[in-house]
Length: 141
Image 1 (cartoon, rainbow, N blue to C red):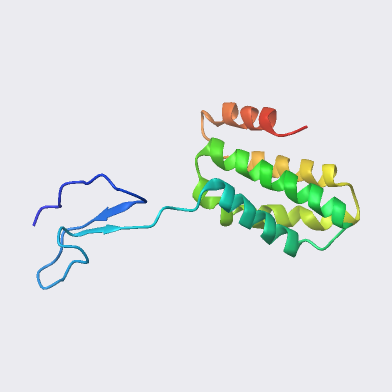
Image 2 (cartoon, rainbow, N blue to C red; image 1 turned 180 degrees about the vertical axis):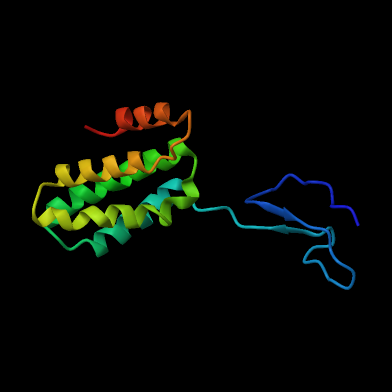
């Protein structure tokens, strides 16, 4: 049985499949609609809440400064690299790695370490040096 014609989604993503014999498709044309992914600002708010709760080093003001900078850094990275779906996969682990530095150093030093780590994680492909340079330029000073 051939795959059904591709359809234009009304919202979210569309998965099309060829139903097997004896398999009842969820929709008659064999197409399942998925919900829209969360908007980037919703993802950022969830990430900010997650980091704020998890990082308990340093003063409250230092933690808020670092978390705000970390969320901005990670959002810039994922928007530029085009991997927004990884915002809750790699990002929290990377940011949490430097959160405990707040009790020994300043938020700006911890954020510098985070940004350097993020730049180093850009895949080492022939054209990626421009991407790393652009990231360095976009990160807040």
